[in-house]
Amino acid sequence: MNIGIVCYASVGGSGVVASELARCLAGRGHKTHVISSETPFRLRGPDAGIRFHRVDTPGYPLFREPQYLLALANRLVQVSRAHHLDIIHAHYAIPHAAAAYLARQILSASAVTRVPRTITTLHGTDVTILGADPSYRETVAFCIDQSDAVTAVSASLRDDTRREMPVKSAIEVIPNFLDCAFHRRAPDPTLRARLCPAGEKLVVHISNLRPVKQVDAVVKIFALIREQLPARLAIVGEGPDWGKAEELVREFGLSPHVEMIGETQDIVGLLSEADLFLLPSLQESFGLSALEAMACGVPVVASRVGGLPEVVVDGETGYLHPSDAIDSMAESAVRLLSDAALHARMSAEAARLAVERFSADRVVPRYEELYQRAIAAGRPSAPRIDTFT
Ligand code: GMT
Image (cartoon, rainbow, N blue to C red; front, side, top):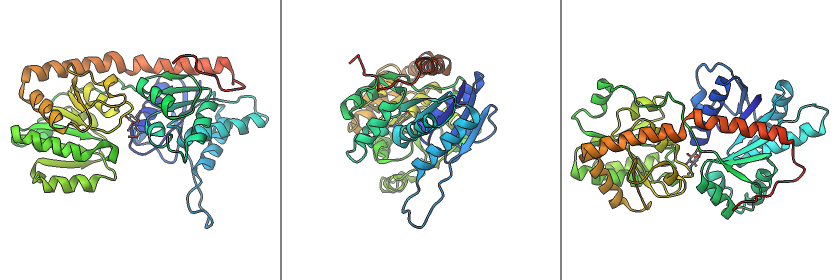
């Protein structure tokens, strides 16, 4: 198939999943095109089989903001015509589902033989924060419904979409996934010695440091852990709460024990040294970073919110608590870090479950089947109505 993948280029779960999907589809022989404002983070470097198409948004003095939606729709039309796309797969509804819809309308109205089918994958805040906002709700719901197929990355997100938005389409749950190269590497004594020079336990948090990730809770949990045992914290990623995290680390007198790493390409290397992953988010439709940790055999202590219980099995691959239960999260963390047998059991189970449930080999064929079904069904004249609850 000729497949166009639309996603955000910034570091964030939806861009990571879209990039990995593009890579896997190309590896399975599909002609894969990625359309975005710049090369997505995880596709920097050589990627055989993937063509990247940049969306330019020329400015004009009259505009106060870039016209990304129009420019993206226009680029989708160009790429569809030039490469005969069978599928446009929009990751994150805003504004990608709208751009895909516009592009399909333009192509339908022109004399082209092939009009691509459009798929929208809902990732989380496109529904739970932005999509549910009255400023966007109607338009986003309409554009989602105009897609030929809609998927959500967890059952929880599917249910949230039903609750929060007037979306009528059937929503198929296709979970996020990891390729099989995402697993624990052999220990790297040099890296370990740099991160934990006195043999401390290594606690890791990876996110885009937005308020929803509660990086302040990460620091508070870590402060409680350190009252019980020697540990170091690595905070990986960049985002608006970077300064807040730094300030809190200073306030708690934790500066010598915390490393703020920023963006890094070598997530596997870092997770391979980690003893525990913390994700105390307020909301998480899936929690891709928790899955990445599990795949590297790192038990997870996280919030019992959204789709996280579909990824982290409470008591088997980590522990889940309410998102404000800082003390309980710290207690679970200390239990895990101080009981070697428990840690080894959870570590092995985390790695096993990550492969069993969320490997690319299992999940990517589900997207291929969905594309085939959408192509076979042709474009429906009206949105399909969901028949299950
Ligand atoms: O909201 C974000 O954190 C960004 C967003 C994204 O598109 O990068 O993340 C969402 O999608 C990820 C990939 O499907 C999920 O793993 C995250 O749980 C989800 N974030 C939230 O729901 C807060």
